[in-house]
Image (cartoon, rainbow, N blue to C red; front, side, top):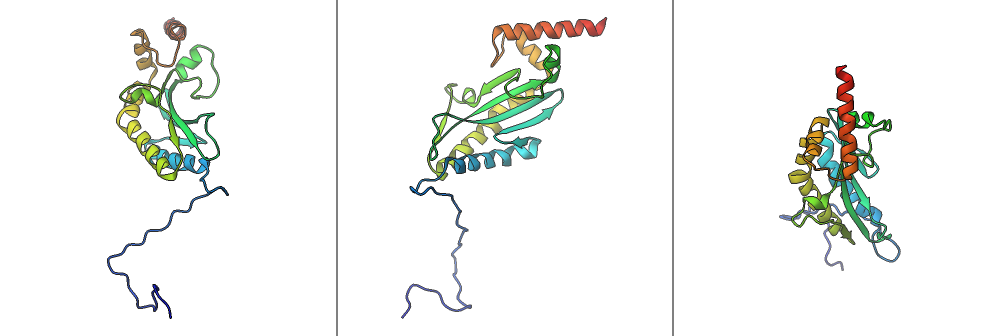
Length: 200
C-alpha cells in the first residue's frame, strides 16, 4: 500500500506552483562556501550594471564615460573565512587626462582613481560599511541593499562627476574624496600646466 504519493500521468496539482530548487554548494560541515555568497552578490551587481555599460572583471566592474572611467569593486575583508563573507564596495572615477598630466601611463584602474569613496559614505550615518554574510538569504539581502544604494545615490553622483572638468571644479572647491590635499593640489597644478602648454 502506497501513501502520500501521486500516481498516473493524468494526475494534476491544482493551485500549486512548484518552484525549482536552488542548488547550493555546501561544505562537509554543513555550511555554505563564502565563494557562493560572493557569486550571489556579484550576480545582482552584474544584473544592475551590465545594461548601463559596465563590464565585469573578477570582482570589479568598469564603464567608460567621456574621458573618464568609472569603477565599482566588491572588496572582501581579511576577516572573511571559508563560510563567512565580509564585504564592502569601493567606488572610483579615473580621468585619463589627469593621469597623462602627471605621467601615469597605466591602464585606468580603481587604485589610481582620482575620486574614491566607499559605499558607506552614501548611507545615512556616512560611516564605513561592511556586510557580514553567513547564508544565501543574507547574501541576497546584502546584494539587494548594495544595488539600491548604487541605483539611488552612488551611481547618479559618479555619473555627474565623471569628467576631468567636473573633477577639477570639485578640487577647486577644496573637495577631494579619497585623495590627500597634496594630491588635489598636484592634480590642479598639472591641469593648469597642461592648459598653458596647449595655448602656446
